[in-house]
Image 1 (cartoon, rainbow, N blue to C red):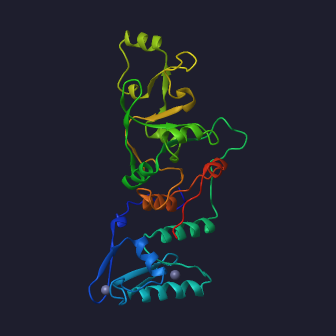
Image 2 (image 1 turned 60 degrees about the vertical axis):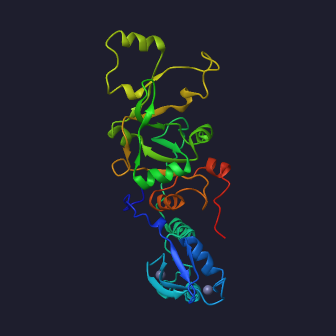
Image 3 (image 1 turned 90 degrees about the vertical axis):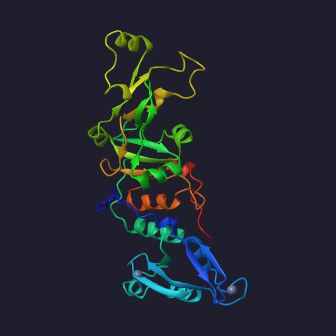
Length: 309
Ligand SMILES: [Zn+2]
Ligand SMILES: [Zn+2]
């Protein structure tokens, strides 16, 4: 986590829509990003009657100092954006800093600003320890990442030998993730092992058929162990049965939902996304709040983030 930041439950501002109208009442309803694009396009006439487009008290925000600027027409909005924030200008920040809150441009600028000004970036890289590190990762797809972040929890799903609920993570260190990211998703939440252990998690247990049978004839497995148990299978022993190499995954499990406010992510892993990605606002919010793990591997596989035009 970045110093001094907390996981914050956000109001769902992403659903907010904005209405623009001309004086004859022709109206359009737009998202924050669409409205900001329209303002910056300089096309401020009603498409039907060519009268100026108006808004009712639209608030523009300087992302640096949080000053609000209230405007009532698109033309006024563009002037305000072009003029910039006087306070910030006086302090030497010559940025294009005024946006509609929660537009793509807003998130993107805040993110770049924080990154450029964040001097205490910490990463989990450990020199000389390529097969081990202190972290475990829950890999997931972008829309899953967004909803985990928004809901503040990773839900336990049925898994393992007994099919009982657990959250699955991997301890595979950085540089070996390609297969995992293809299988589970390009995004991830990174936790410290000690935090996961404190929450009741630990490495999955792999036992052969014979050992599982032996235990069953001796009273079976207690409830607490069940979420951790996996059948030991090796692709060379049972060829064709395996769709992927479980032994390589080096799984960790948590036998209940993982609550982000109790077990805070040490970092996040961010793959590709754009404005078409379900929950992109929440992905930006996560990037603003949690340190991002940037790896060489990311740079190799990433196609870059699409920017709004
Ligand atoms: Zn009109
Ligand atoms: Zn400002």
